[in-house]
Amino acid sequence: MKVTPIETYKTYISIKNHFTQLNYDYVKYNGKVKVGEKSFYRRKDRFWFEKLSRQKKDKEIIDFFIANFSSVDDPQSLWIGELIKTGNDVYLNWQRKIQSLSYIFKNEIDYLFSENNFNDMFKIIGSKHPMILKEFLKGKISLETFVILNKILGFEKEFDKKLNDPVWQSVSMRIKKYSPLLNIDIFKYKKILKDVVIGK
Image 1 (cartoon, rainbow, N blue to C red):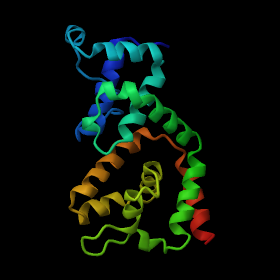
Image 2: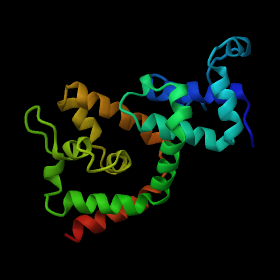
Image 3: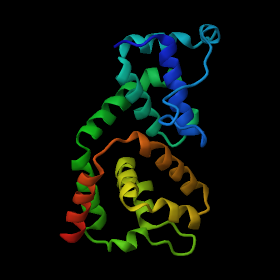
Image 4: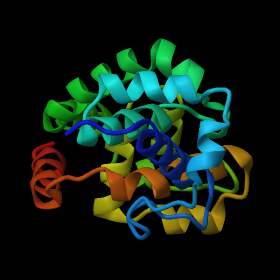
């Protein structure tokens, strides 16, 4: 089903709010935001939303914005003009990743735990970043793998207590915000993790 330009704009605002505001939850509020129709049509950038609404269907537009806002370190700086130019490539890459996510997850945890002790990956010594976080920051594992591991193990709360630096705070925010939007069969990923760790 096609979406109108104002619906596209509302989805953009709601998902941007989700990724940038601690107190806004896209899932909890079902994507609802207060946007006046008159104020929308006074916006100088409305033609970007008109263009996007012609290109994407209802569900696609949601995934398009999730893909783009989850892929950047600073979602606050992402604006609609940039999304029109580069957003579709990001979206297509994200789609491919999601379609092969269990394969990617297995490969990445194989890499993580092939030569490293499982518990050592999550150990915090002083204020130093744990190995799992370092591997993520180096781009060795994807945000999806990081989020799934946290869904299974719940290490984020411990990291929040012990790490008081802007790098972790930024990553923690990304995990919190992306996690409810990443729909997975958690039992499937628990089994993959268990098979890899036990099979070492």
